[in-house]
Image (cartoon, rainbow, N blue to C red; front, side):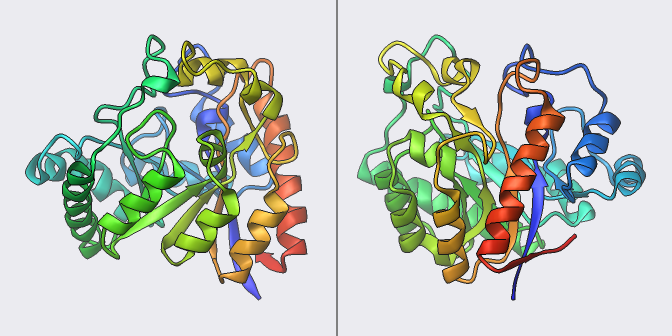
Length: 300
């Protein structure tokens, strides 16, 4: 039987990009609620101490482990030496924490954090830029993997690698050390085919974000005037069981390909309108139902 683990991101409790979309809860309360909802892992966020001497006992208290976390990379416009220095602290921390991966998010040229920049103005790479970027990204991922920490690359709305064709081109331009984080919400919002991407890139998918989408909100967006953060504020994202994406089909296809690893609920939204504990329980219940149907064993 295939094995899986359930994790969640703290972005449901406190948002790192939009601090106004945050609940006034401590790290301990966030972990307590995640554990109560049935999760055994959590990705890192801004209220996490970056050393295991301090964080380890807190995690142990709630039966939670580090199951990844976002790293803001600038490799598109920087060089390897700069990026090696920039990632060092988080890399050492993730190695000590036994994280399954470091989630690489490219923010060079990205407009994801700028409310003045509409979605339609995202950055785009030409063929030569993609090849050069892929070469640097491969070298960076090899460096991290050599030290025991695999890289999972996060395709992301409003960033250089957003759409399905961009994901295809990026994966073709990178080597085996670059794994892919499959994020259903970002992929669907970018107009990608959720199953086709799995069919093409399943061999290198190492981490899964189960971000759901409210289709009615997505359909109402004006990408020529509204930003990624505008979409988040409007409530475009939610947890499985509260949105419209076909996670049953997605999980069954992952099972067909033998995926074993983390399924992480990562849905940024207003915690005052969408209470995090309630939403976490909804997402966990739906994922447990789907994973059971796909004959996954959920382990802690």
